[in-house]
Length: 505
Image (cartoon, rainbow, N blue to C red; front, side, top):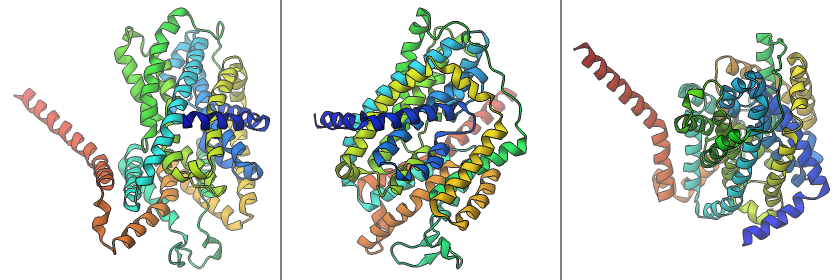
């Protein structure tokens, strides 16, 4: 009952006219950046962080939440109409959605994506509402060794899951961890890795790193590929509503996608990509029309889109309850909290409940706003794709320069942005994931603090790291994340060799 009381208080905050305005702005911006390929919610929130410095925290985070949800809605639009996913979670939507658009059923694909996103987003937010306080209460029993083990699990999960290889994943992770060591050691007061440069004593700003790796790196990559080809729109035929058969074939995938998306999104490094892949595979196996997959099966749009949006609510669970980001966007949101002097975690539910419950309540409102925006106004979002990409990315670079300069008026930050932007470009060319670097940068210093606390309490006895059931279990899971894929790959290789030898005989 206490949760319902807090949620009602949150709606009182979220329904204030100024906060409704920021929710509308966030949803519209999020949908726009979802439609535009290559521009995701992480980059948008990072670029807006300096701009929103004077905005009240409640209003700023309500807008950021709208951007997060809106980008997932918008990503489905460009996936269906142009076969160009605006967000990584929309990749699977493009497989069937674009086939439907080519056969004149783009309206039905867009409608099932929008309604499925609304259903999954609402159920995911309900789960967030009632699970987050319970998880936050459990977090009070965590000691420093438990938090350190949890962060190790987050590191290994992110490095293994994201990217095309674990070598690339761990390289990106260690790069982020190295950046996190620059500046003054908070416990000893000693400067580290500053090389005599006074401007680096405060460390490297997370916003500078994020804008450099995403905005500058992506812009250089696009410019090097000379991507100036105009997109060609697929015409929409009919209205925005689905037939009775479409409804009958969509409602079960919506529910199954929700059940897959939220739990996986709540895990470290769960993200939105894995649940959409699993949802598509499941719908293909369960569908009574498997022959239509690859030719425009509506289940292949409904399920992944529901999983995508349910996972978006799921990634807020570890962020708000434990202060652990599981995706690049969650890492940016964590940095935004810290910019306002706030640290997500169990204490935030007690010290600043108005902000958290206002944010959660705004997710319900944002889902309704996005449904209204995406069903009747899809033509407007499609026309944004007519803007030439060079103009889009030139604007992003200008905005990035102005934002970074306005944040600190430091030439060092501008130089770092340019240098790290070149690294971001190289990472893009050689397919190194960026999310592990961001999570290493933001969680690395916290992991170091927790490790030092645990060792100080135990008088430098390293066995303290496995002294509690929680820490031992989390470290064991982290080891399994590292070892299990290698063992499974080796087993498949041995089975294949045995089969080849049997066939040769």
